[in-house]
Amino acid sequence: MSAVQRDVVVAGLADLRARGRIVVEVDGFEVGLYFHAGEVRAWHNVCPHQGGPVCQGKIMPRTIQPVREDRKSAGPAFHPADRNIVCPWHGFEFDVLTGRHPADRRVGLSGVPVRVVGDEVVVRI
Ligand code: FES
View: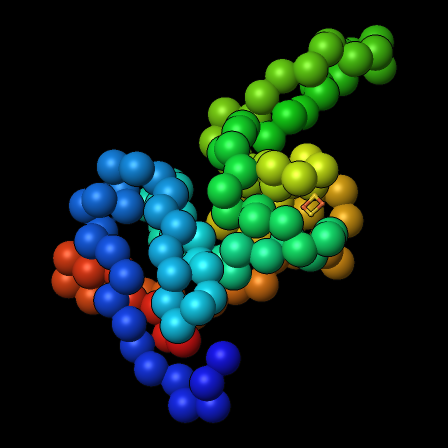
C-alpha cells in the first residue's frame, strides 16, 4: 500500500445494495464491499487463516443452536439477521458487519475505511 492514502470511488451505492457484495481491485489490492442491515463495510480480500480470498465466499446466515427448557438442543437453526462470510478455502466464517470470527473474537478480517458519499461508495486506500 502506498504511504499516501487517498479516497477512491469504488462502486455505486444502489449497485452494492442490490448485490449485497462487490469485490473490487484498487491499486493491486482486492477489497470486498458489503451492504447488510443498512450498513456498508469493506474488508481486505485476505483470510486471516491462510490468506484465502475470503471475500469471494458465500454469505450465509449465522448458525445457532437454541436450547430448550429441558436444556437439550432444539437442533440447528439460522439467526434471523446475522450474516457470515464463509471463506472458500477452509470454511472459516466472519461476521459481515464486524469482521470477527464467531467463535474466536481475536480473529478477524482486516477492515478498509469506507464511507458513502451521495450515491457512491468510497474507500480510503
Ligand atoms: S484461508 Fe480462509 S479458511 Fe483457510
